[in-house]
Image 1 (tube, rainbow, N blue to C red):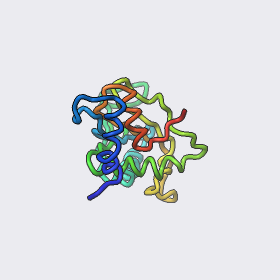
Image 2 (image 1 turned 180 degrees about the horizontal axis):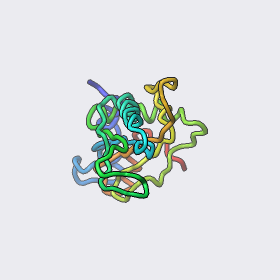
Image 3 (image 1 turned 90 degrees about the vertical axis):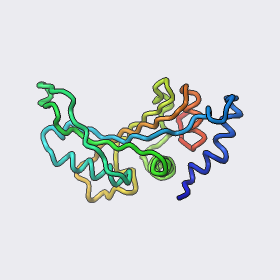
Length: 180
């Protein structure tokens, strides 16, 4: 199975990153490690069906079966009990990771209303980028008529980069549309 972004990484991105940052070894060039897509919602506390809907949406978006996220501790003011299902998440690696990132950059993000680019401030200092999506309906796999409610989704892109600058350059070379 060939993936457009993986081929792009091997043919162009590695060389461009090596020229810019002057790595001593080819293996030091940062690469994508994994992408975590998650959705946690407060409505899951009152209604258990919401978790099933979240799982179905994430399965359609990622092409992989999501894991149910459960509460780690009880919080009385939120009416939350330990072990209660509060959402779902899915971790993508390898081929599915590159396919998801390709679909996110080329199909989904341009479908956002009044889109001017993603925030360049979503880096954590260790080369990982987190992006919040307000509506799951920007993904072409989601049928607008079959969803019960519009929900937000978090996308965390984990790289092997040591700094924000390296990770930003890596994602920029993949085509991530950062706001200036």
